Length: 221
Image (cartoon, rainbow, N blue to C red; front, side, top):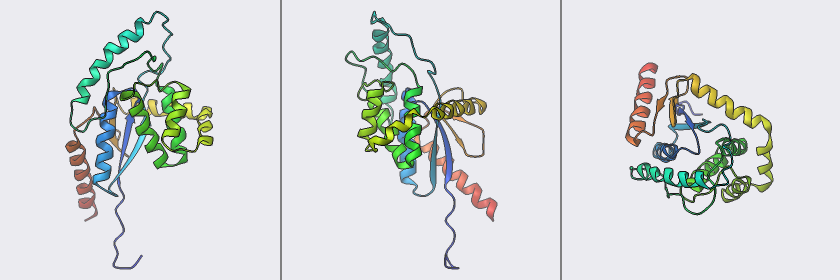
């Protein structure tokens, strides 16, 4: 580096706890990725698992659970009505809802082992598949299809069978709880355990970023 060139400042690192079954996490994802795009080089997002439904639900041959789930998904219209939201559709058809949170989280971890771009593509694909397409993202066939749709190498999908990924998912969840995350989405700054819970407006995330950069600059003076 030439003497007159200043070193680029390190990006502000946001740790984000999220569950693919949470509609508000979809909104937070849209806003945080927009924050990243509008502040090139200033933001780094680190996504970690949170488990709203850690255990598989029992099968319901009567169909009553599916009907209740369809009714529940009408609540998705609330996050859909917000600014900078994800795309939502009330559940249609006869496909069962996801049984639990872990399968999608594990496959996302496998994508992250490829690189950050692979994770981002799959992360967005999983959210859209569930909330906008009404697909069961706990089903292995659906997860494999999402993997292909995200443009990831098909031979790497078997990486998701590594049992250590499940351990990583639970470790993330425990970390979130230890930091006081009572729900998701939860966001904190790297090095600071204080978590802000909820899908905050883009403007709040921007102010948080600007204040952090300002504090860093003041500390360096």
